[in-house]
Length: 383
Image (tube, one colour):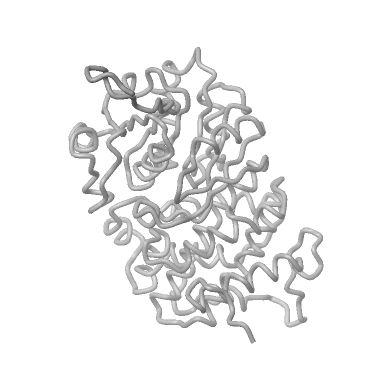
């Protein structure tokens, strides 16, 4: 029996790791929520003082996640050194084209640290064609085994509303991937792991380019046949490109490839899909950029991806035609990349990475995905 004046006993709940998220846009804030809901002690870094104050005090980010209540365990600051102090893991969620600049400011704060650094970004650096993990390794001058990347079908607003989804955490180090995955999971978010950083990053980049193409044909008014053809042929382009650059083909059939491709191509929440739709409606590239409140990474990645593709000898007709629309040299109504060929000889539909028929697993995965979309996520009806 508890004595009358004794303090009530409370269960001792262990505190999760202290983590910092650099960047308080929609995805950065959503990932901070994921981590906090999994038990981590989260500090957000926001470039603007007023945004940091709103997150810290009101537990809201009204500009990027309207109507979402953030966990009380999340805080925020616009002082970078304060945000990093005591961090056991650091997550980066800034536009890919400003990553290097942000890392220069971050480097002196992490120079004596061995904490994992996790990229949440899906782009390549326009000037160099480098993946985000490569830019992180260069600028922080750190062991690549400390670096992880997160990718998958992750539309920020859906996850902020706690709709169930999954992601993949990739690192050269299995240990690092496991550490991050254990932190980035909760009752609505599950993290899987792999060690194919190249495939995981390129999957996240390349699906954006296909989503722009889908947006273009949507804006023009073409229907489901056109979109299904582009998604399917787009996955072949993605796989050929990624494998030619050192990825494992199976990664492109997983969450970072096929999963992200479907989510990004079919959702109006996708920034890249929205940008493509505006292009298809006749807006110029400059007008699209002005209308977009957030960065559509696919627009900046088209040119460097095509340079890498040419260097590797990989044909990417979908991405080539997206670039032509961006450059204003092709009418959006003429986009039909799944039909383009300079040769009337019938061609096989397989990938160029040794899977003669495109891969039975790949074909089955696509069929399941389209069945789920057609039947509201329930799969095909039983006969």
